[in-house]
Each structure stands twice: as C-alpha cells, then as structure tokens.
Amino acid sequence: MLRIMITGASGFFGRNLISELANSTLDFCALCTINQQSFSITDERFRFEKCDLFDVKRTRDLIETFKPTHLIHLAWYVVPGDFWNSNENFKWLQVSLDLFKLFCENGGNVFIGAGTLSEYDWAGGVLNEAKTPVNPSSVYGKCKASLHKTIRQMKSDCGYKTAIIWPRIGYFFGEYEPKEKLISKIIYYVKNGLTLDLATRKFARPYAHVKYLSKAFVKMIQCCNADMIFNMSSSFLHDLETIINFIKNCLHIDQANVNYGAFDVQPEVLHVTNDVLKDKIGMEIPDTIFEDIRSVI
Image 1 (cartoon, helix red, strand yellow):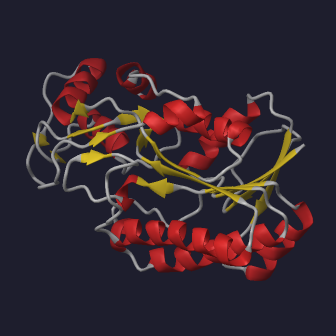
Image 2 (image 1 turned 90 degrees about the vertical axis):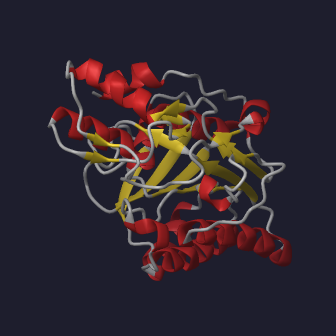
C-alpha cells in the first residue's frame, strides 16, 4: 500500500489534490498536514494532522511514525502578491531541505516537489525544459530553484535512493483559489463594477483549471519512480481581453472597468512547452478554459 504524506493539504493545490485522490482507485493511505480543520472528508484513507513544519520535533514524530513512501510537498509561503520577494521564502527553503532529509532517512521512495515556472529565465518568452536556462528573477523563484538543486546534491552526497520528481507549476485557477488570484479577482471585480488595474490587453498566459494539476499529481504517484523535471502547465494561450470579455458575457454585463496597461509585465506573451508532461507522465491538458471559467462563475 502507498503511504502518501501531503504537506500544505489545506491550501489551493492541496485541497484539490485530496479531492482527486478521494475519487481515485489507488490503494493508499494519506497523512495530510494542515493549518486548519476545514475538511469534511470521511474517507478513512485520509488522516488529517495539524502540523507546523517549523516544529521540528512534531514533524519528525509524524514522519517516523507514518513512514511515508511518497511525500508531496506543497506547503510554502504563498500570500498573493507578497510571496514573490518575501524573506519568508528563505525560511521555507530551509524547512523544505530539512523535510527532504528527514523523509529520505526514513526510507521515503518518491519526493514530489512543487517547482515553479518562475525558476526559468523569461527573457526569450518561451519556457522549455531542455532549452530555457534556469535563471530566476524573484526571491520565490530563486528559493525554489535552490531547493531543487540542493536536494539533488544531497541525494548524490548522501547516497539517498529517493526519486526526486520536480514539476515546474504554471498558471492554474479553480475551486479554493485565493480571491486575490487573477481569474477569481477578475470575476469579482467585473461582477461588482470595480476598477481592474491590469497588464496590456494582449497579455497572455497558459491558464488551466486546477483539476488537471490534481490529475497529473495522481499520475505521478502511479508512474514516477525516477528523477524527473518537467513543466506542469497548459500550452494554450489566452489573453486578458478575451478572458474578460467572456466573463462579462457570462455575467450578462455590458461594461467592465478595466485599466489596461496599468502594469508593465514582461514578456507580454509567455509560451510554455509541456512535451515531457505528455510523453513521460501521459498527461495532456486540454483547452477547456472557457467552460472551466463558466463553472467557477
């Protein structure tokens, strides 16, 4: 039986992953660390524990008792807007290194991290695992890249047998999303007639519903047992103006107060390849953004 430990289980990604796991046919038991008691799941395969990962003794006791075969590490400091260059990132880098070491020392088989597209150099406007250099500009991206590099070095130096799976996660929206995140924010502001300050009309990113992220994580649990790095992202681009016009139509609103060009965000268009996700994980994220936005609304 798989013994899966999930950190950050009460967060945006964690809650959706738990829903996907609950609907799967995997033979598993899961230890989910949370910072609040907000789950109504009665599935006996899940055990929820309040745990501050900075509490070394509490974390060690849980891992030594549970002996997870898989660790999905989603917990991090992700306060919208602030997380990009917060010093909290350095604290989470250190606690994540300690967590990885503890997991490996207790016989862990597969460590699945939560990397980010922000680890790359965005200057060329294309993020490709094989070609785009790792050269992050934000503290968040630097700490995530440093975590991946360091745990790989730890594995080599210490002789750990643990497989390191490192998805660099892209732009996802959906249920349990923080209200300050882009898609939820647009819906709220348009619905309530508030002024939106945004990038240019043609600012485009490969947005996708978080259900596809959750499905991919379940596939990783099933099939990944060797080190791997890949982009966890849709490859279908949609610009802000098109998204906002669709939301207006869904809400039957003629006008939206949008201040396009309030922010200069470069590159304006960001392409992301996901060939490894397709070939190695067997997962292809379809272009269902508009039906998914309608569902969220």
